[in-house]
Length: 365
Image (cartoon, rainbow, N blue to C red; front, side, top):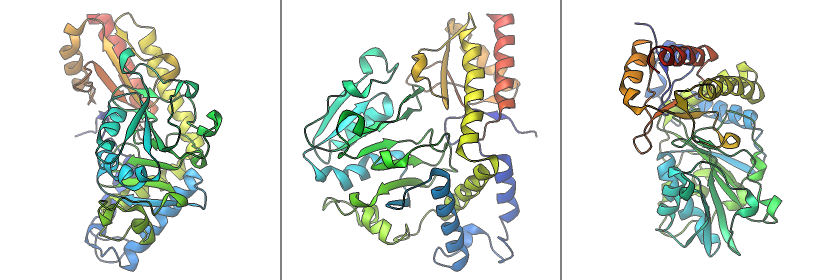
């Protein structure tokens, strides 16, 4: 069976060369006589994999020396609790910028561990854009400011760097959920106190969560924080206080090497811009399809779109599947369609989708 074009929002497609390498290594990694899933996480073979993955990630993102790279478990939803348990006690309140369903969930979860303030919410306008930082109503002394810089469900991506120094609050750490667009473009890590991302979109398989944290933010965990989720303890043990998700980290490491071979994040960004422009261009030129996100805030990674005649939705999805285009149904909370164009999706896959959309409109629109 030939492989399909997989537009899933996550778990998402992986580079085919990564999958082939993983298949080759499955029974015997580099002649050691066993696969990565069977290795002791404290053995020299796995330790080498872990160290290389960390080094390659630091190189790709140009992570400053005063930041720690952590591999945890629990996904982005887990981090919604782990972050406030580690940081909310630094000040009187945590500020949240709500631009979609994920940031809304994050604020709701943080309330369990301390006081929160909604600095801005775009819910009233249907989460169609991102408010300028000058309009954020920040607290006097927040422990941190949170934003989800790419909302996977709504397809809203920050068009600017969330640098609190630009609004005179540079001493406050910015916390960013970058789960669905991390490694899709260069990012200035130094502008953030903490960046986190679930792996299952642009990094690797589900099971590992990446956290990049500035060292001065370690050591502030609430007493109720489980030891395994205390960032300082995790950092002190190089993400091996408990058994890490070794196989997921191994695959992530292969993805990091693949990204480097592509030319790094600047080259990946160039390719991602081309893919997004192709699909949005098709939508904007159409009489059948529409985008409901402000053009300045459209995500390159997650492209929700709607058929103006929703009675055609099922026929569109059935025809897409027959053409080898899968996982295009929109999130259940918003409906419509969604095409996720993560790094592993080549331009040819987007072109196949656009060709299908144009033909569907010609014959059914």
